[in-house]
Image (cartoon, rainbow, N blue to C red; front, side, top):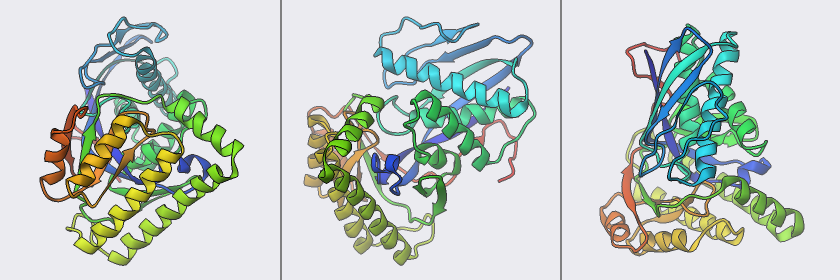
Length: 345
C-alpha cells in the first residue's frame, strides 16, 4: 500500500490572467487530498472516492473508466473527478513504463470539489506520486508538477495553467508565469476561507473570459492589469523580506489586502464572480479583513480573506449563503509520502 497526500491552494492574486501568460501567486494550504494505491496483478483500475465534495459521494468502477457512476452531485463534477484520476493513472503508467499496470485506488479529500481550492490538482499530484512509487519509480516534486499539469491540460481541453499543480506539488507560495514556475518566500499569511457551497464550471468561465478578451480591448487590458497587481504584490513580498512561516507585519497585510480587493473587482468585471461570492467578499471586508477576493475559477465556491483575528470568521459564519468557513494555514510542504517513505526533494 502506497499513500501520498498533496495540498489544495488559494490564489493570493492572478487567477484567469495566468491563462494568458500573466503571472499569478497561488499559495498551498493545509487542506489535503490523500491517495492510496495498491498495484493489481491485472490491468484493471478500481477507484473509490467517497469525499471529493463537501457532502461526499462514492465513485467505484473497474475495467473501463468511461463508466459513469450514479451519484447525487452535478454530472460535470463527477466526470471531471473521474477524468483527473484517469489522467493521473496514465501519467504514472507512462513514467514507470508500465502501460498495463492496474491499481486499486482510494481517494480521500478535505478539499471541496470545484470550489476553487485546487481539489483536482491535489488529487492528480498525490495520485501520480502514489502510483509511481507503487511501481518503484520516484519522481521529484517538479517532475510530478509537470506531469500533473499535463494531466490537467488534457482534462481541461488545453485551458489549464501550471499554477494549481505547481503549488500543490511544491507547497508554500509560488510564482507562475507561463512555463516559468518558482517558489517564493512568503510569511505565514492569515488566510480565512469562506465557501458558498457551490462550484463553478471552470471551462465555461475560462471560455467566457476569453470571449470578452477577444471582443473588447478593455477586457484584454483588464487581464493585463491583473498581471500588474500580481507584480506589485510580488514586490511587496520581496521588500518585506520575511522568512517563510514568520508572522507578517500589519503594513504588509494592509498593502496585500488592498491589492486583493482590486483583484476581486477586476475579476467581477470579467464576469467570473457571482452574487454569493460577492456577498462573502463584502461580509469579510465588513468583518475588518485586510482584503478579500474570490479564489479559483469563480462562479461559485470560495473566497479568501486576510485576517489574523476571529472577526472575519464570525462575519462569514453569520452571512446567509455561507456554508462553511475555516482558517487555512500555509502548507510549507507540498506532495509528501504518508506511508513512512522519505522522499528526495
